[in-house]
Image (cartoon, rainbow, N blue to C red):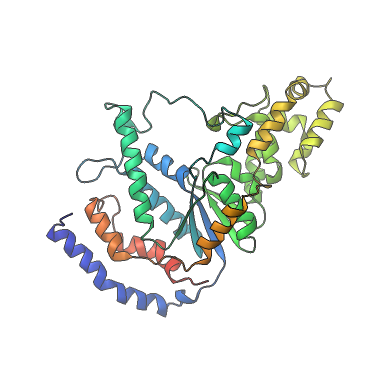
Length: 355
């Protein structure tokens, strides 16, 4: 693609400043940082949120909110949390297969007739779907120029990959998970925290307790009863948060399991209607737990080996020149203002950290 003289000037100006900035960063001592913290990004969750919520257009009037919003959102999280590594995790082909064997209607909601983003209201669903696919494919190319790793495992959902990374591969690290998916809150402990970009909230153990009234380990039990509309998982009638906390008060402070829920409901089934509802639908409860739990996720051996192969290699380097060239090609200068400082503040530390 031909670039304008203005774009060429911007790119080469950035290139000329790279050596000076690198020297400045080294003088500040950032290149020696070895603090072991990792940010695990729920890739499609983050992308679809940005695509739906951000109506940003480029200079040609094309919607670019998905990819530019993703880059800025992840950049903001890196700047805020200051991790040493960042891993972008996407669902693999056939990722939902395992859970659909358990529940065929898992994530099988009918496509809505309304548009994800309001800028497509006057167009067809096909226009929006084409833009979504194009932006996601282009985003992957952008990520290849950043000091981040990307992982997508065949027949494995991003949720399971992230759980494996948090609990096994990076078990000696402080872990931040970036997602608006509440399922990840069950993993929160003294080492794992969840950054919700929608709520602008970092969930440590105390934050989960304050918002849900129970310790993080028990949140999966509540969600098992309540269901998850976003994944098309129906819950048990009457099992809202207040009712569940009233019916099972030990969830507030005591690590529990399905057996304790069942025993407590059986012993008290004549006291509250919710106990009878739960017992009558116990197979649904067991199924939902299997669909939602992430603490006992076991990846296939071949998938674990692929994770190790990808992450044990030298981390990709920041390619400022190619990144600036792509932004010029896609006419995103107005979407990502102050490009030079944005790249430095968000990605330079990742580029200098060495395992």
